[in-house]
Amino acid sequence: MEKEQKKTKKLNSCQREMDVTISEDKVKRKYKESLDYFAGRAKIKGFRQGKAPINLVKQMYQDDIKSSIINDLAPKAIHEVLSKENIFPVASPVITDIDFQEGKPLNLKVKYEVWPEFELPKYKNIKVKRGKNSVSKKDVDESLENLREKSAKYNPVENREARKDDYVLTEIKGTDLDTKKMFPTEKSVVLVGHNDNEKSLNEALTGMRIGEEKDFVVKYKNEHKNNKLAGKSIKYTVKILSIKEKSLPELNDDFAKDFGEFKDMHSLKNEIEKELTASKENISKQKLIDEIIKKISDKVDFGLPESVVDHETMSNIQKVLSSLPRGQQKLNKKEMEKIKKEAQERARKSIKTHLILNKIAEKEKIEISDKDLEKEFHSLAKANNVPLVRIKEYMKQEGRQESLKQNMLLQKTVDFLVDNARIEG
Image 1 (cartoon, helix red, strand yellow):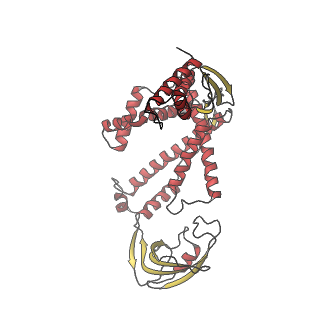
Image 2: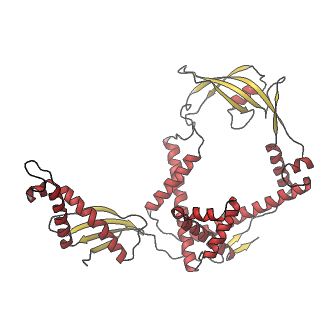
Image 3: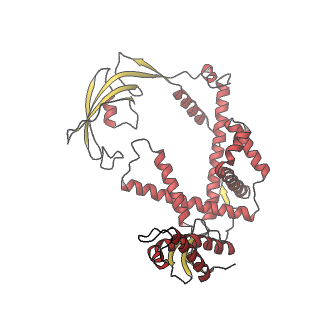
């Protein structure tokens, strides 16, 4: 078997440049094969198909023959060289230069990225401080009040003015004071006094009655998130169509019974305290984890494959954009640059953390067994209230099982770090 020659150059901690030479004999055989193929199918004026002079075919189909040779030989040659050297690029190698001459070896210049090599710093006995997990009476009372707010009812009223915390159905018309252009009339429900409302809207609605109209002007800043309004002065005319006032339930035993199997207010408070304690413990543990990982990460510095960073950054940007409310997804250049910068920072931090955790898992021989995976399947089936067989079928699709195992491995490694940390407080 004819072997490809290669010469590799290290560009940085992750990027490599490789010269690959495909032998003259192999190129000649492929050239003849491609030339015969095109000669047999060539339709050249004045000659029957397949009967045109070979030099004429060569002249007319030179670019096609060249592309055929490169497309067939290059990927195989690159794969063979990488496999022989046990090199596993993080993404597909890219051919950056081709030197092709008939009758000579084919020379390729190829760039590819690999995961960085680095030495782990000390990762056991990391000193961290535990946060406070105690739940106060005030915490419980605030949670109860939140439940009460969520249980509020809104009853229609007619013979009074609108006031803070009323829900009002409004009809709003807008006019651009500079262009005199009128915006379409819109009906919307507004919570009077809410912090997200324009201040002038809250002031206008407060004290109005059903059927009453009032004008107010809003001067929008040039940096306003809605490009259609940015830098404009809009006069609004608002009319109240209906008013509903908030009615809060009493905090008594009947209220407690509406939230599940609670016989009285005391049992509801106990459950709230239990849930708040569990939540604070989870938050405290996550802070411990973040601090431990940061202390390890700060002690080691290595480059990252930019192709992986770019991919993760784009994924982060898409998540941010998809989470924006409708109408706020058209961002100006400054806002987009900020989102991109933050997305890239998160990407670099996440990739670095994963590399460190995977290396610790490898060193400590932390693995996910079939028993661990089966247990996780049962937990997922129970949590999602679906049959176990459906969870397994879902996980077999598109490599989801491997992704799950990787997440489990990272979590198991994190637990190992916490167990081996020096936690104070």
